[in-house]
Length: 192
Image (cartoon, rainbow, N blue to C red; front, top):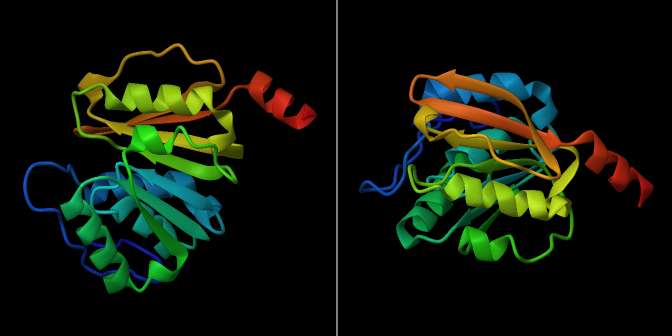
């Protein structure tokens, strides 16, 4: 595992020992950040179920203004902090020890440009998390995206009120689902 591009390019990242996390492949990470492009520069990035922190770290390396890493496991938290120190990106990061579902019940002070959801597989956690974000649209900045990483077999359509699926991409055993605010939700936010 390594940082692919940006100020920490080439830096190796530690992994979490044991089977509890599922690191993203370099191929899938490269594809994801090719899609995001320069829009990641200056963005606020929320990495839920952060694991090793490598997706949020890649965002920081490519110029994100801030990344918040939410993780509840002791070992993953130690690895995230070590990876942030090793890459020199800790000054723009905030590591939050919390259960994602508890974290999402507290209203945010500011919405995020990108919310990345990559929970443990085959437990339906991605659906529950996405539905919580959908029920609390303040988590997402105007024109922001929610990105879900799942195994392709996990996909199923979800009824959502404020978000809509606008793209799906598959890279081997990784599938990304891209959600944005529905036009109706964007119009409501513009009126307030």
